[in-house]
Amino acid sequence: MNKKISIIVPVYQTEKYIEICIESIIAQTYSNWELILVDDGSSDKSGSICERYVQENDKINVIHKDNGGVSSARNKGIDIAEGDYIMFVDADDYVSPTMCENLVSYADESADIIISGFIEDFGKKQETIKVSDNICCSVDKLKQNFDLYYRLPLLNSPYAKLYKRSLLKDIRFNSNVLMGEDFLFNLECYKRSNNIKFISNAEYYYNCTNIGSATKKYKQEYFNCYINCYEEGKRFKYGEIKFTNDALDETFCSNCLYFVQTTVYNVKDKKEMQFRLKGVLDNLYFQNVCAGKYNYPLHLKIMQILCMRKMYGSLRMFFALKKMLSVFKR
Image (cartoon, rainbow, N blue to C red):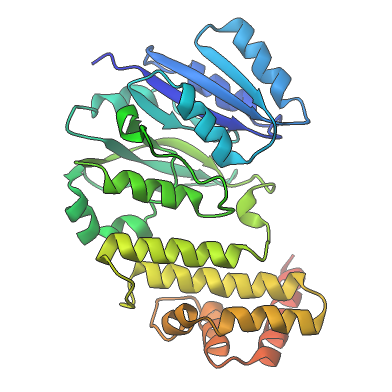
């Protein structure tokens, strides 16, 4: 099979990592690929580094655009992609030389998405996330085994996957969503897929050392993003929103608990803090999932109890103690 792969890399302020990413793609043993670098208004050297590679390799194309976020950058790449399949790589990550070759070897007309594993790179250690055996499933079977794949987790992110380009004809990332846009994008793809293949390969290296990652920032609007993902995940799985102590409930609950923590750490005014916490703790979805039983570590279980009972003062004291202990451990 000599199918062409369009590799889309959104680039923003990643001069420290982008060369490693590009070099890993150039080193692919599979030759039929194009690399689309979308410079999303970088003010560092990222854009000029991309331009240098364009001059050196005719398989590489770069687009410079005003900053609009990672979703708009990926969408721009999808718009101009010419490959039979599309693959997304983040600019601070990298891939093994055989990734494209191995992914495309599983691609056939029946499979709309190939989902592989990935390797979390913490610098001094690595952790592999993948299925144990290759599996081909329909959308209905995916729903039945949703918790397994969601917990691994393999369903959320767009990386370490191969999408049939025809599938993405009118599917795009929602650039108005601050968090969870990857999951919402994938849900749309899963809904329209005939077959989805999970493979036991893991050749994508996810950089867990980048402290500038969006997942480590705090914004008040994130709470609504968690709700949106929770609702859409439930509708995909059940066709309705119901509380079942499943993986979606567990993840939504833990996301909200950590959101409560970051609210306490970031909002200094006590009245404003309590107002924002009340908006979370009074939320019906959160109250329902907070009553669930999950295999949480002790600190999360304590947070869960305090949130369920709406003990604002105790929450502030708990997080103050937690923060003090974390500083002491250093």
